Image (cartoon, rainbow, N blue to C red; front, top):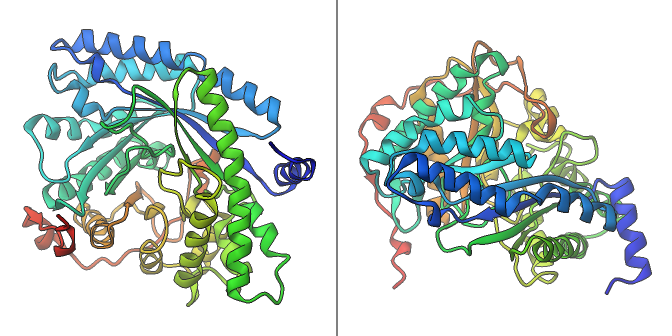
Length: 450
C-alpha cells in the first residue's frame, strides 16, 4: 500500500520532475508461428500479435489515467525473427505482417527484427542480415538488433564487418531524413532477453509465451533530489540516489503488475534505467554536473557515472523482486540536452563516451557522425565497444548514425524522443586491414567458469 505522503510525492515527481513510465513492452513468443511456408508463418505472426497485443495501447492509457503517471510508449518485442523465419525463409513476408500489426495495434515501436550471430552465421542468417537496411528504411515502427558477441563465445568479427556495411546502407536509404533508419538498429554484445527499450528489444528464447516488461525513467527526479544535497559527501549522495531509485522503481512495479493482470500476460521485469529525453531537466548529464562536474565530459565523468549507475541498481532491486533488462543509466547523445551541449562545446568526445560505456548501461548510443565515414571505421568502432562488453561481462551496444551528406559540426534532427545531435568527427586512420581479417576473437579466459 502507498501512504498519503508517498502519493503526494509521486504527483510532484510527475508534475515537476519528469517522472514517467517510459514504456510498457509486451514480449510475444513467435515459436508457435513457425511453419515451412513463408506466407503461413507470416499469417500466424500477424494473428498472434493482434490476439495478444490488440488492447495493449488501450490498457496502457487506462492505467496511466487511473494512477496519474504518464506511460509514454507502448511497444512490442518478439522472438528474434531470424529464428522464426528460417524454416520457410520468409523474413520479408513476416516483415509485412509485423508492419501491419504494428500499425493496427497503434503501438510506438516493434522490436525483434533481429539475429543472434555471436559465434557464427548460417547462410540464412547472412541473408537475413542483408535485409535489415531495406526492412528499416521501408517501415516506420520496426526495430532491429544484431548480437555479434558474448563473453562466452568471443566476438564474431565477420558479423562485425558486415554490420558496418549494413549501417552505411541503411544511412543511404534514408538519406532524406538524416539517415534515420540507423536510429532503429543496435549492434550488441551480451544482449539481454528481457530488454523493454528500443531499438534493441527482443524476446529471448528462454522467455514465456507472453510477458510484460516495463521501463521506468526518472533522471529529472534524481536531479531534483540531488539539488537538495549541498555539502553532502559522496557516500551521502549515493544514499540519496538509492532512495530515489527505490521510489521510481515502485511506480514501475505497480504498472507492470497491473498491466500483466489486465493483458493476461506474465510479469517479466522492471528495467530501472535512467533514460533521458531532449526535454530540459530530464538529463543524465545534468545529474553528473549536479554531483560536481563543470560539464559532462570533464575528468571525473566516468567516476560519477559509475557511482550513479551502481546506486540506481542498489535502490531499484529493493523495490522489485524482478529487476532486469539493462537497468542503469543511458547516455544517448541525441536524447540528452546536456550531452548535446557538451558535445557541441567539444568537452564530450567519442573517446570519452567510449570510456563512459565501461561503467553504465548499453554503449555508444545515438551518436551522429559524418556520412562519409567508411564502413570499416564503423565496424572498428563496433569492435572496440563490443570488446568492452565481452571483457567486462556486460551488455554493450552501438547505435551510430553516419548522416549521409553531412559533415562534422552540422546537426542531425531525428524528432520526438530521439531528439537531435551534433555530428561528431571521428578518427579517420584506417582499420581496414584489421577488419578484413575476419574470423573470431576468442572468448576471454575468465569466461571459463565451469
